[in-house]
Image (cartoon, rainbow, N blue to C red):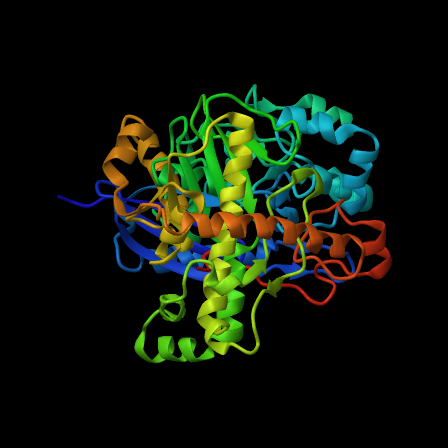
Length: 544
């Protein structure tokens, strides 16, 4: 039988990939990845530009690379997935007027204005997210700082929607992506004219809303020539990275929980009504599935922190990887294999529990290590302590979600780069005191997009049938009763330490690891110790 494939163009923060999935088995048939990097405009504080004109040829090269081993005619559909919160604006001819990445925080004054004028809580009540990293405040920035560009905007697009428009000439957005703009009513699943009006933004730049799995067009002749795809191939509306990641691991029903673990960890629980956190800490967004919403906590730059550690301290492991092909992260895990739960008391301050209303993090810190006991403070100890920190952060997010939604996960699906670890799943199970499972296909976001595309072309009747056929569980981890008391004590210590770390940031003594626009204290502004003031980081979504 002739094989059929779905192509997903997956746009991460610093790389783009094209993955081909077998429609009948869900197995990867080919993948091609190319790095792209945020361009930091030093003239604009906090600016990280997305250069669409430079990045589109990279997308095309990715697709051609993936198609090198298969017949383009065997690709039954093409779709896209991508990071949220960054976006592009195009004019009527499709030319990019503006583009930025999700880490961009140029709209400091606009966010503060929304808070000062009392609009931020009203936006949160409608959209489920506090304005800071979304399109809304950055559109206000374009209006205020680049009025000519603002006037020329025809359509607002997320990165996966931009890919779909480049392929098909059609602009459309699914509700998961639209939720992340801060301009969407998550209850009604439609653009909010109320938010646009109260913020003084145009209401004519929003694309039509199309449910995930909707075929919105076909590959044009121009796009076929650029990418190698067959002209006329169905193009399915793009999906958001988190929502796609939930579907790609089978998390489509009420109470299903998942950690989509890349550069940023998204700790998610599916709910059947749009809960809004009265304390304005958590994010609630539309699930790609109708009648479902996703409550999210965010692990800031978890995967990037692991990559930093590998690059800074793992030169031997990287050399072995180059010579023998053994994964450098797995070699670091071997050093951590015999380190006991709690890492001899070493604690790490990296990502804090998310607080959308005041989203900032402490300065990266290792504490509790003994310079006179190198056997308890070696590379493997620090590596495991970082893994434990990520697990404690995830546990805290699920506790906060349970406080609002009344439900703590009975099982957590771990996907993304973090799922490739042989150790992390057990640590999360021990810390969160719940079962953790790892799917066979770790690239849940790309597979989730492919599942919707397969449904869109009629290969499956719905996502339930598709996930039942294509999602397989590879490993399960049960929590250790012996380790949980250790982690319970460390969790309480970590929360106390983090409060002290945030105090140092607010006092302008140290720079935070990262913080959203509108969260800088007066002392921080006076000290000039803001994230990025000493250079910019290159963020890799697939790290660890």
